Image (cartoon, rainbow, N blue to C red; front, side, top):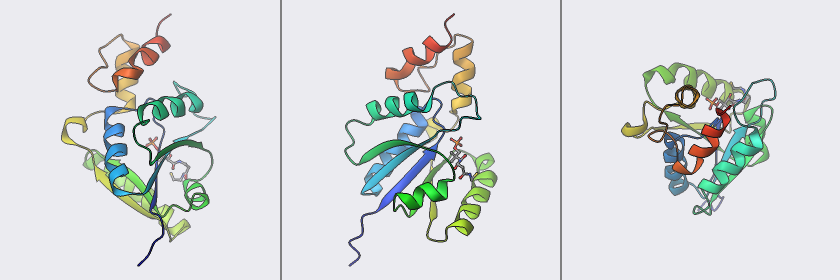
Length: 163
Ligand code: PNS
């Protein structure tokens, strides 16, 4: 029997992490020996939170999940996954509108690294409309973001928009 540890990478911007992301992380933690939540550190992209802030936030939220690791990564996802001996990339699918883009990335990544498969988890229905972009938009106008993000990070998001 193959005793190799099943390592999966769940990559994303997580700016900020949402309840939809947390749902995918928790479900993935049941499926794999190790789940690496990989936070994209992209200096060219203007982010609300620095990658280290995003990593710290998610680390705090997954502290009860011993097989979940949170790191930031730079460069190509395929290279990062290879460096971690991961064979699976996890992505959440909210709606059909996500599918075309996700399929293109998954297929490109598989050409780049044929060892790598992308596994799509359908977002739970109650979170299927949530995106980090919507969270930032609501927060910027002082809207209630409690239905969208873990309560622990609400003050951190709101602080970003207080002048
Ligand atoms: O949460 P997001 O913004 O939808 O995540 C996108 C992410 C981080 C998965 C994607 O941008 C990515 O893998 N970036 C790393 C660079 C890379 O490998 N690009 C090739 C595939 S687009």
